[in-house]
View: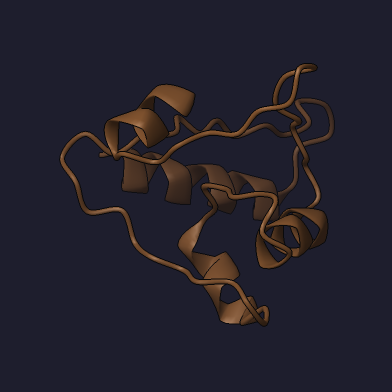
Length: 93
C-alpha cells in the first residue's frame, strides 16, 4: 500500500517505530479526521460521513486490488449457506 501512496505523490511522515496498522473502522476514521492517518477502505464506508474526512474513489489503472475469500462451516450445512455459496459461484463467473 505504501508504494501506491508514493506513486500517487503522497508524502509520508512515519515515526521511528514505523507505520501503525489499525483494524477498527471508527479508529481509522478518527485518525484520518485528526490529520494523523489515512486509509484505503471499501466504498460503503463513505456513507458514514465522518466530519473532517474526505472520501475519494480510486480510478487509476494501477489502484490496489484486494482478493477476497469466503469461509463457512463445513459440518452441518444448511440451505441458507448453500444458497450463499451458489450466489458466490455465480458472481465469480
